[in-house]
Figure 1: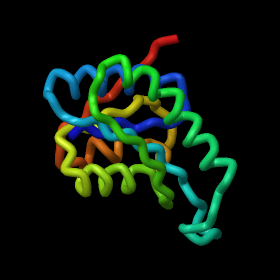
Figure 2: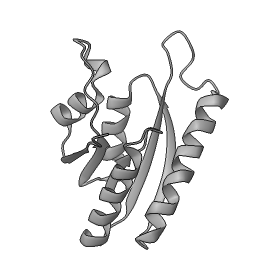
Figure 3: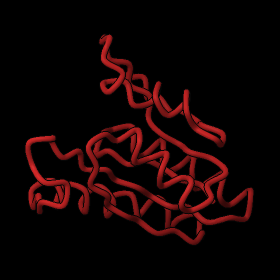
Length: 134
């Protein structure tokens, strides 16, 4: 199983294409994940309609790319306090062999700003990062 992280950014098309190609080559399924980060001052299960709508749109936009590869895929939206831990938890829950995510380096000392750094540091499976150079 391959876990591709969708964020609603321009990197999504690279993440989806890379994930789809790998899934086809490895003859496995592709799981698409969109994480909504919920601030600590709100309940974790609080409905966030605007963010949910963004996630649904992002996943819907990616469907076209994935469908071209004729692979099994499913999309999911999760709510979490921090995307990094949600990604790792989901990868373990589905038994992912590979996580694919967009690379975006923020200049910050706060690990929570650098999701890719957290995922690569603590992942128990392979991690592939995609970067678009625009």
